Image (tube, rainbow, N blue to C red; front, side, top):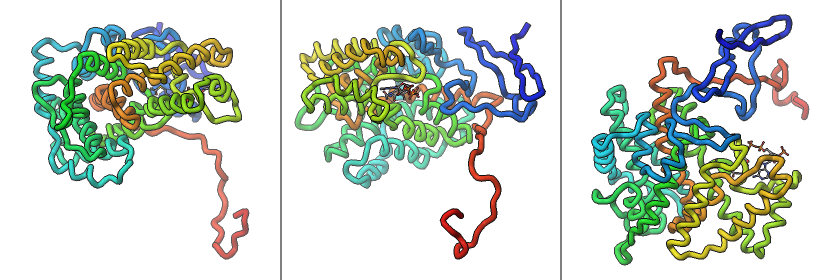
Length: 432
Ligand code: ACO
């Protein structure tokens, strides 16, 4: 028999169906609640609300599990490439040799950016944040490549997907070069996705960039770990904006804007700024721990805590290892890493952090990895965005191919004034 939940609302008793997910997670289907009872549900921050059924990513925050299309992220980070993982997320299966080659060829074909787009970059004021620029430029792609209307055809859709995944990397490197007043470096057909990006970022005519395997491997794993995370804030933004049937570029642009926030993707930048601040103030982590616990102080320990993970974020474990390996291979000694380790040790043994289930999240060590690769702090969230793009695209595709696809339109509980008359301006007192 199908499971149901009984609900007593006023003098009514109704039964609501229970949906069981592939990993046995349970959800009460309340889609008929308002119609049957007149009630809505209230769930600020949506912490108890599943907004969709999804086949893409499974995570269990209590057990620290993350899988893309069923495959543990630990296996992907070790054995896969970012391009292959992108294919897996978007197409639901690992590619054959031939499919992976075709996808790589398409990425190479789409890697150039319309020359006129370069002029846009020159018009952003100095010190514009690269996330704002990236969001605007991705939205602008719609004007340069308007053939999105034909997206019902699979080959057209494949092309648009490849265009976004390929161009976002060229556009990000281009914005960095232009912001520094340097010559733009073009993508090279002989380089893989990660090497190509590092080369576009750091090569210059007077100091050729040496592409090191350790750096490529670290970047590859960094992007795989960021490739999807089910219904997080930016992915929900993509789904919500996309539900109005807006074009893919506009939906992704909204995702980039959401990711920018310091409580979301902006945390990797905020972590490094916090660690620098601790270093510049003598390196003692204890006052920062005390501040994070003080309810009268808005300061939070950046890179700690997560809405879903109530144990160690599995991505943080991997990125911590990558960080150690990279620094050793590059023979770098970063004082920020020592401070991060101290902070982690003190926090993990502190009752406040234990009781609140606050553990390092993916952003805690990822900033140190990016810094070691040579990325300036304000590019960190852009790096996250490039990694998250395949996830955003797969969620947009899941929605847009769903026959029951509906525009997102939540309800609210109104708490403002009840009806009152308009008062002409010359008759208003301070209460009007
Ligand atoms: N430092 C100190 N206290 C914290 C922290 C933190 N980093 N995070 C949560 N808390 C405390 C809150 O003060 C609150 O305490 P209380 O119950 O005693 O009032 C409790 O833990 C729950 O916090 P919420 O804000 O309700 O938790 P929520 O699930 O809404 O927030 C979030 C999750 C936003 C990630 C939060 O932990 C945070 O601000 N962390 C720092 C920023 C960060 O690292 N963000 C990256 C997240 S990962 C990602 O987006 C890729």
